[in-house]
Amino acid sequence: MINGIFLKKKKYASVPIKEKRPFSSQGVVTKCPKCKKLLLNRELDKNLKTCTFCKYHFPMTASERVKFLLDENSFIEYNENMQSGNPLQFPGYEEKLRIDEKNTNLKEAVITGQGTIKGYHTALAIMDTRFRMGSMGSIVGEKIALAMEKAIDQQIPFLIFTASGGARMQEGIVSLMQMAKTSSVVKMMDINRNLFISIMTSPTTGGVSASFASLGDYNLAEPGALIGFAGRRIIEQTIREDLPEDFQTAEFLLEHGQLDKVIDRLSMRDTIASILSIHQGDY
Ligand SMILES: [Zn+2]
Image (cartoon, rainbow, N blue to C red; front, side, top):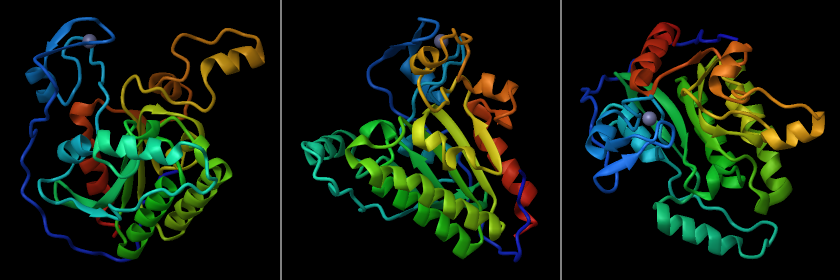
């Protein structure tokens, strides 16, 4: 489904682009988990955390993605102080939230906002697996739904970088409800003809893969990303068959028609900008 015809045209100011701002990895070298070669962190940061030998894509934080994707100083964050409660009084949940908050400097597993990519205005959400494994609780769902509604109000595109272990077990049914809630706002974007680009990064699983992550007008992914609903072992035990080695990888999904394109992180910004430019005339 490609859907980018917008009703009204809006103009947004371009922001000067400064390419490839540095990120900071800890220490001097990092071992690539795929090819096992040692990489200088300086080089790794320059290559947007991709291995220069085997192209393995290391995990990225939400703030690193903002830096590499958006034009400098163009990001305006939405609802940055929204935090989860403990709707089911799950024992120890609040403590876990506070520990993740302290370790990541994030209030929740997603940041949302708006900004420009090579001058093209967009609303966006970026998930971060360091916070509760990127799981979708009530606030993750709410922030994503609100960011989509902002895109509708402003008649701008919406894009999301997904990274999630699925629904948040400590919020039970409240967490599962976010699948229906976010999917219904995706439908509203469809009715209002907002372009929606979903970029799946590793891992995109469970309730997130089964809701908004798979509902983009463009469904894209980073190379090697693990994308699926249930885990390999559960499926193998259920169907009593061995699964292919590359099962649930971005490349496997592309081959089987569930993705539109797998995009190397180094060309992600250019590719997204060119998709936005194709649809720019539709606003
Ligand atoms: Zn490597």
